[in-house]
Image (cartoon, rainbow, N blue to C red; front, side, top):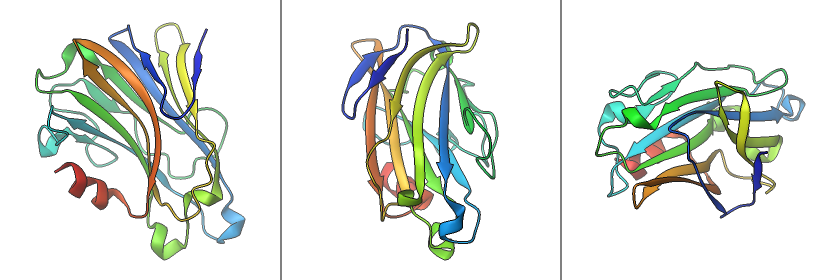
Length: 184
């Protein structure tokens, strides 16, 4: 049975292979323009910096150099039920320098489209075993991010050779470039 987490809670991840599913619904009538949300994964070392430039996995770089993290592709509309974007993870392939995997969602061209996460609802991140489709954990964002255009949904980190997930739910007014500056 899946564990539903609250902001700040942590949960061990025992399976080395899993899929991260991210979902959301948008209210496009509020701006008259469709939304394009993008999931990105920052693969960090023990100093909370990108292991290398290629360790940023997103719509323009779908796979990490070690093959441990693979983005399944950009969903330009977020329409429909279920996960809007997915990232496959195999921790057994992770480079020995990898200490953390940070999961971020940004709104593409948020400023010019006058969009923010206050216009996004039903946002979640979940981790599931892709082989059995069994959900391991889920974190639903409940805050109203009325000025934020980027949110760190959660992070997967290694402590004492054990991998854990932390429900972060922290917003930022900015975009992908701001996170690149933070983790570079």
